[in-house]
Image (cartoon, rainbow, N blue to C red; front, side, top):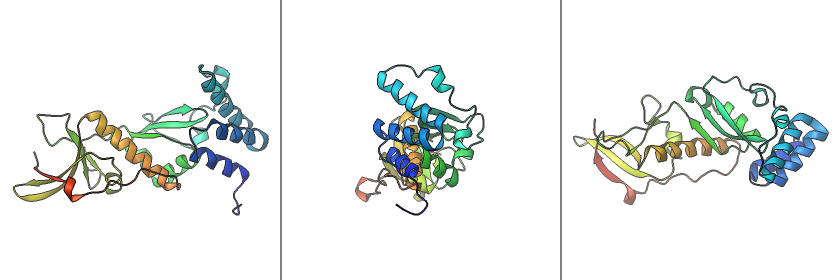
Length: 221
């Protein structure tokens, strides 16, 4: 065992590596009950058992959660939301200004097998006002709607890649999706992939900018 790594750390890592395995969650819950945090362990066990039985989680199990976000060690804004699944945070909706923080994401993903992180204040752009459903993302920062960091742009799932130009002058890449929802889902996947990578968990492969799959188009301004 690595220096400073406890049995609890190893059991939690098993949950992170195998998020669909209820046995890993229950073993970790038992360890918490016996060694570290009884309420937390009972919450995980209660939620797993309710999900396995196909019933609503009982009120007394939810009451084991402290008020607010103390278990997460966070003081988020009002727009911040989370969803629980079998004792762990399953999804997050947050403003970019709060969640797009390396240390914060690293802490969350090191403690919970999170499947989705949505940036509620970042919206895709369209290069064609006549067809708003055809929308997507530009790389290069967060200055306008539709722009994301280069780090996230590299992680966006496959869409239709365009090499955009205006009057013969290159203006940049644009990754387009057929619908607003699919563009939003692509961004959720990219943020989640990045969060998982921060704690050494498998993340989706980077999209390859194959020249054969890139089209040229005129930017609509």
